[in-house]
Length: 223
Image (cartoon, rainbow, N blue to C red; front, side, top):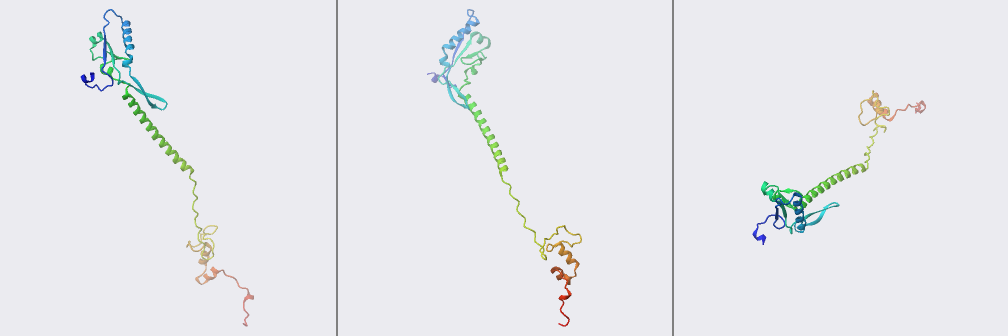
């Protein structure tokens, strides 16, 4: 019936019950506290809600308080309302730990909304941790691959072509002689020096090697 009489509040649970204590002059401060605690204990089953355990982060359990079947019970005193008005923090919600304004006292800070906020924070932290681990893993894998790639041998250079005249290397063992003609890429240092020292007609002899003939090798004059 109350749902047909009152508009939705946007909060879980039934309409609240406000208890206004009027100690007057007969009750002292301690007696008033004792009476409040007595009413609080007698109504605990109605205002406390039910704890719903859900998954937490790692080994830490987490959950929320379901107030869907709870009746909020609020305490105040007549002198507080007379002195400060009902909009001031003069309300004590059973289950809360301080004097609050009416909107704060009617709020359920431990409901599913709070768990969703915590879960969103944990999810963001997990994604950040996973991104960091992927980055570190990729860097470590890259370092490992660089360290374990075998060194590739340098390709062997083809040997330089030999001298086209004598077959010796193009460069002498002692380095280029200052008196040798410039390198032509075809003949070695010794052949270039010999070629420069002989006339063109004697080049064939120089290239083939000149041999002195012995007089006995000469044919006799009578032949």
